[in-house]
Structures are given as C-alpha cells and as structure tokens.
Amino acid sequence: MLLMQVFFVELGWLLTVGADSWQHYILPSITLGAAVAAVMACFIRSAFVEVMQEDYMRTARAKGVRESLVVVTSTACATQ
View 1 (tube, helix red, strand yellow):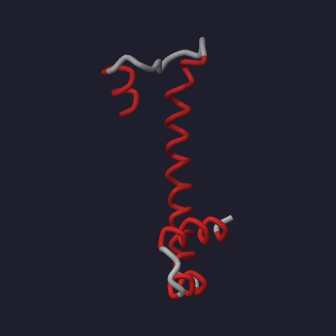
View 2 (view 1 turned 90 degrees about the vertical axis):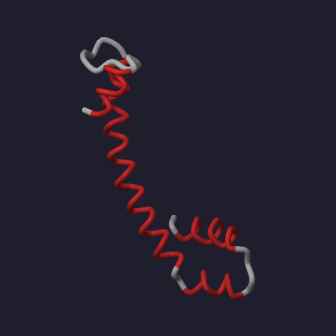
C-alpha cells in the first residue's frame, strides 16, 4: 500500500489497476521482488558472516593478505 501511495497517488509514475499493458505489471513486480530480495539478502549475509570466521580466512589475514582481497576472493569462492 505504501508503494501505491508513493508511486501512483503522489508521483503519478506507475499504474496500479488493470492489466492492459506491461506498465501495469511494474509495481507488483517490484513489490514481490523486494520481498524475495530481502529474504535472499538475509541468507547471503549469514553465509558471509559464517565464511568470514573460517580458519582459512584467519590464515590469509595472518599471512598479511589485504582485507579487501581476502573478502573479495575467498568469500566469493566459498559461498558458491
């Protein structure tokens, strides 16, 4: 309802009623996609935190590898 209030009533950008064209599907798609994205972000964050505490991550830090390099390379490979 909040998205309808903002994007249809206040701004007049998106349509909310009908199924005549593709423009009627934008707001429902964004709404459903945002809910799924929030759940996925929660799972990804918990997996990321778990990987960051693994022994090989601590070993890489102890060897002097930059933190940004450890995060980008090691966590990207481990979470796949």
